[in-house]
Length: 373
Ligand code: OSB
Ligand code: MG
Image (cartoon, rainbow, N blue to C red; front, side):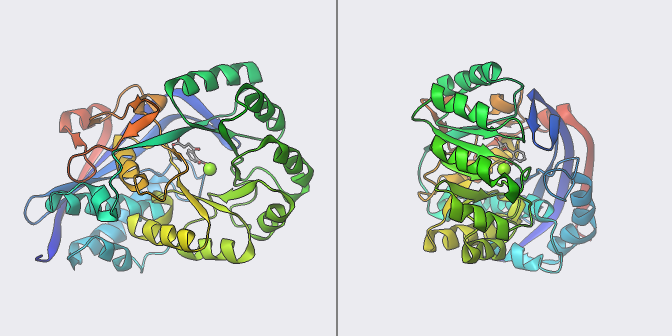
């Protein structure tokens, strides 16, 4: 194929209110801000990607304003200079920009979508995936009391979610997990601490070990590998890393030290699809359970996640929910809905969803255009 050239990028800055505020060990989220990047090639093909970074630096360091600045000053100029034949070349072209994984992912995933549309194939085929629907899980925020929590969980289980992840925070952990386990003796249940604990909480995690949890996600500091390894040796339950994992090198470190047995893989947190594919390969070769996480994506990020998670190796249900678990409305068609406990992979070419500018502008508070010089 001839060289592909990106000639134009449109950036829409949007906000969508959440259906219910989401509480974690680090805070409370009521509205999700995100940008959509629409890349256009020399033939007029288009692709779309989502910048999922948060407004506050509370989950990881990168904020949406930092991502926008790096996109404008480094990544977009770099992309305009590049002639490429396959989207996996983008990741290497960005090597002189350190970090800023979500910024990189926003354009890199847009180019993957453009490429798949350009060759007229669903994105999943580029990963040799062909499942048309996948089982999914739900991530539930911190609740004040177990009665409300059990009611929330029931609405999700009744809708067909096949796995529950509960956010825990010191003082609100063992009791709600026990309540969920009692109500659902067999369900795949796990906890996500978002780094709120230290190794001095080891006795607590030993108690959790009795609850047959599928895994405990990110109990300790986002830079810690040593204490996670100590914990993993002391408990039967798998430890899963989320915030720690930005690159394949981080996964190798975790594996070498025995810091975890599972990886929550988020494409934007590792800088895009190319790095995510390398991580999947490593995990499979080294017996690490890898599964797909989420960050309150809109329909664009979710469609991309669905295509990626349709690979056969993703056997553990991801943090991939129907649009209405997060938002009242969505900006793409078709909107993701649960049927028989499954989410469909949108089947058209690229990420398989379409967007209307009118729908983007309804939720946009800013818009920018970049053109090749
Ligand atoms: O820690 O996995 C996390 C959402 C935002 C940021 C971090 C996390 C999460 C979730 C929700 O757990 C996952 C989802 O359903 O999108
Ligand atoms: Mg997490």
